[in-house]
Image 1 (cartoon, helix red, strand yellow):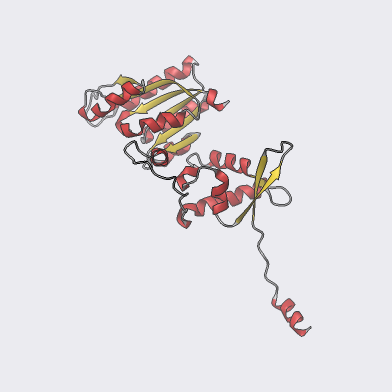
Image 2: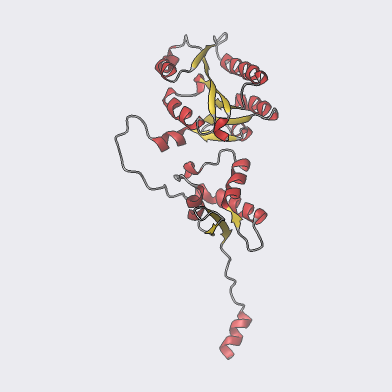
Length: 262
C-alpha cells in the first residue's frame, strides 16, 4: 500500500514558513509514513526563531548549518548530503523535499533515478524545473487553503470554486488528448486511468487547485465532456467513464436545399 511507504521528510527552513508545517505533515501521511523528519537552517539567525515551538510539537530534528559566507546558502548542501546518506542506507522508500528553491532539482532527479518516490512541496513561486522533476508536487497554499488556518472561525463547507477558462484551458486540452489516446471504440475512457496519466504528465496537477476534492466533479465541470457510471461485478462499486461530447455536424447547404424542394 502507498501509505506503507517509509518517507524521509527534509525541509529547507530558509524557504518555508512554519505556518505550513501542520499541513505538510498531514499531507505526507497520505503518501506514506515519515521515518525521518529533518529541517535545515542556520538556527543562530533570529528569523528562524519562530520554528522552535513547531519543532518540539511535531518532533522534527533541526540540523544546524552555519552560513559561512554572506549570500551563500550552505543549507542546501547539508540537506543534499544527508539525503544521499539516507538513500544509501536503504531505510526509506521515498523522500519529501519541502522547498521553493530550484537548487534541489538535481537532487530530486538523482533520487528518482535510484527508484525513489519523491514528493515535492513548495509555494506557487517554485520554479518549474523543480516542480516537474518530482513525481508529485503539492503547492503549500493549496493544502493550507483547503484545511483553513487554526485562527479561522468555524464555517460551513464552501462550494467548489468555479474554475475560470484561463485556469482550465490547458487541462481541457490535456484531458481531450488523453481520452483520444486510451478510449475504447465508442470513445469512452476510464476516469481512473485519465487521472493517473494526468498526474504522471503534470506532477503539480491537483484537483484541489481548482476547488474540488475529487477528479470526476472537476472533469464534469470542464464542459465538453460526458461522464457516465458503469456497474462492476461488485454491485456496490461503480466505475466512472468519460468521453468527449460528440459534435453535431451541420447539414450541408445542398442537403438543406433538397429538403426545401420536397
